[in-house]
Image (cartoon, rainbow over all chains, first blue to last red; front, top):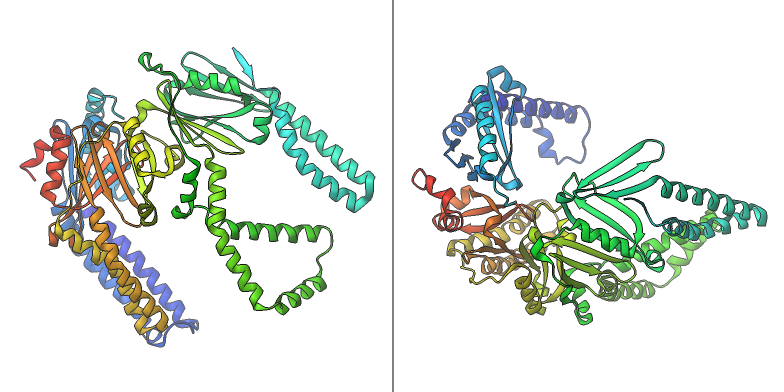
Amino acid sequence: MLQWGLEYLLGSLTLTGLAWAAAAWGDSGDWTWLPSFLDARIWWSPVIIGTLGLLLTLAAPVWRYRVHRWEVSSDVVYTRIGWITRQWLLVPVSRIQTVDAEQGWIERILGLATLKINTASHEGSSHLTGLTAHEATQLAADLARRAHDLRDDAT
Amino acid sequence: MTRRLSPLTWVVGALREFVALIAVAATGLAVGGLSTGALFAVAALGFGLVHHVVRWLTFTYEIHDDRIELRRSLIGRSAKTIPIERVRGVDITASFSHRLLGLAVVRIDAAADGDEGVLDAVSRREAERLRRLLMRPGELDVEPDSVIARAQPSWYRYAPLSGAYLLTPFALLGSALGTLYNLGDEFGLISEGSLAHLGDNVTGVSPFIGVALFALLVAAMPVASILVFTWFNWDFTLRARDGSIVAERGLITRRSVSLERRRIRGIELHDNPLERAAGVVRLNALITGLGDAEHRGRLLPISPHRVAWRVAEQVNGPFRADLSPHPRAARRRRVVRATASPLLVAALAYFTGPTWLVSAALVAALLGIPLGLDRYRQLGHASDGEKLSVRSGSLRRHQQIIEHRAVVGWRLKQTLFQRRVGLSTLMIAVGAGNGSYAALDVDPEEAIDFASSITPAWIKPFLDAH
């Protein structure tokens, strides 16, 4: 959750920054093609973006945490993600081709990792975020071993 | 045994350059008189020949039991090794000059970063021998060459329906004008004065001629489309040979694509409303891990329904189930989706833009209603125990029939709008074709039942938890 919060925070800060810069540029320069009502309110855009960003940072991670689920039974990996659009993904271990455990820089600070599962089809690939680094590496090794054991030549 | 490419290869290369050389020599002549022109030509020909012979000398290939090695040692040495196991397809292409000399270019498609092995060029016989060795059939697969289907010339008239090559007359005109300009420039015909003069001439010409010319181009579109289509797909023949399916086509350049039968996991049929009205359809094969699937997987170009389904059965086995329709709610959703964007555009145009845009958008929205209804009608999914099928689309309708064993995963997707009306989209992850095929707007319960019927072992553990 914290990881997502940080990600969202950074994202919205950047966006707000960009919008602010754009507004400043628009104000100083003379953008004649912009309709007049927009021009007068050009400073609204960074304010709006900033507020939205703040809301997103506060609300989204909690919601995502509650909705995001994953489970690995003996032979199938099940993932549930998404808050506005929901997705349930089922990938049998026998069809997994590669498993990667990756850490972005935020993740490294927080001690988390993302598990990337790849299958023959782009559709069947998934990311499991928010795992602890230890869990992720263990799971990766585990899945890779089981995939190798269960592999049959269907693809 | 290490082999070299056919020595005639550099003849082909030289021939091609010779033609370009004539143009260079002509320019040389025009510019500096006989001696300069002759000098240009001889020098260029000499360099070209040396280049080709050197390339020929330094390239060798060797085929072992389990791999083929292509080696080039010019300045640096490079060796490409392709394990025969990983060969997905072998293309044999022969351009006009190649055909004259009895040569062909062999392209080996292996599953390695899209980098194919190219043998340019070997003799026809050698190409066939290589293909036989590379597309290694299983012990049981040896079968005599048999024709599965052959495109009839009368089918070429359907070419304009698919929109292929329709803009050819415009493209040709454009490039012709471009070439004329360049030539004129070369020969000093074009200058400030002449251009201005030309401009006067053109504007002086009556608009009637302009319209007539445009009308001519438009009328030429379907004709050009048929001609170009015929050029590329001349005598399209589908053969079964030694465990692979071979598709041959082409008038001047003959191209032959072979696909291993055991890699075929399904078929796909495409059409658009015009083609549907004419009763024709296009057929592709779904191959495991195929790159350029669009062209390589083509089993039939545009052809009548009956033939396409017969070939589909022969290549992939019969499909004995009818597509079941999707819930009523899907109909409303399809219509809404088809009319929503034009309506949005109309609304925006009403406030800001020109009035013609508003009426155009409203017309589009109106047309969206039958479009949405047709889209709903085309939706369907089914399974006959061995294969599954999904269909969707109207302007670009496609139906896939895929073997059960090719399924590698399931994804059930539900947007906010779908949640409210009790629908979802089932996406089937397949290790073939483009990887993902969808059954749009199905009832979630039905989707899960469908998935269970196909891969029960995967779904059962989660049925309760869900």
